[in-house]
Length: 383
Ligand SMILES: *Cc1c(COP(=O)(O)O)cnc(C)c1O
Image 1 (cartoon, rainbow, N blue to C red):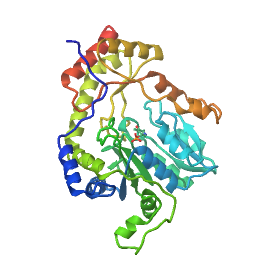
Image 2: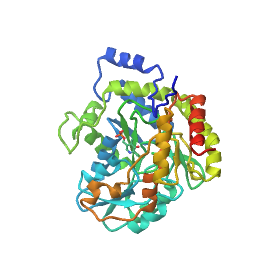
Image 3: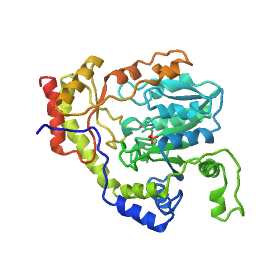
Image 4: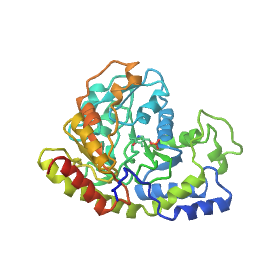
């Protein structure tokens, strides 16, 4: 039988169905129900986030962040070019101009040292993206932001259960650094609910308004807590809450988070060991995790030496029944951005656009699968 290794397979713990059934039996299946509150409590307890709100996606959470920061026409927002469109779209929707920074040479994350030169009097926010769940240097970024009095929104879509060392060398969870942060529970992430996301509010001055924006611009949350005697339209907002059925699914995943994370890390380490000879031979580069960052095993990628090599490797793996895929196309070179902005030169972002290759990475991937993927790559390089 021909081997077939898919790129991603969404994992279910087995508890999802039972939670959903419980939610259906309770008849309270709209947003902010029992399971939503359980998820909120989990995140606030486990990661020390000041306040969290589940959303229908990370995209939604980023859009809420842009509304909360009062981003408008004339404002500038700094972010890496090598990221998903939602990181930029959320701010473009409010009329902002996006100022793209390059990636680090050793990692696809934003080059922290490139940020300060891009700051102008119009800069409102910096949006670091923790690529593959490995932290950007948050000590450095928060220091820059503080000095220039600008806000930080972490795009922590891939960064669940990952950490950055603080100034004292203690691990501090990603998502707890920025004034606001956004997570994703899309089926391609470590912890999933099909579609799903979460806004984290670390700057407590944003909490009250965040709840209002979340509840369609009404003070409904305050009403249900008995803080106001009627609720009405008090601000702009939208329907950002997921159904409690989604939260029921998500809560099942959260109950197994350590189990899921441990296996993913095993798979990641196994890939690394198998592929190390290829890095040593100069055939490709393996992920380098900065010394201030942890590894949450969101993704296993390799960086090829050229676009041609990557294209040939993808076809070779496909012929062997293995699906490996490239990732972002730098946003500074996108048709949409170039239709409104000048071209800029961001060589590292372009290099990852051309050369980064993601290997199959999911909970149910067996050790044998990892071995087979690694063997196929070695065969491609005649090793
Ligand atoms: C997945 C992802 C998003 C979007 O998440 P959704 O939940 O699908 O909206 C945004 N940014 C990054 C970096 C991502 O990886």
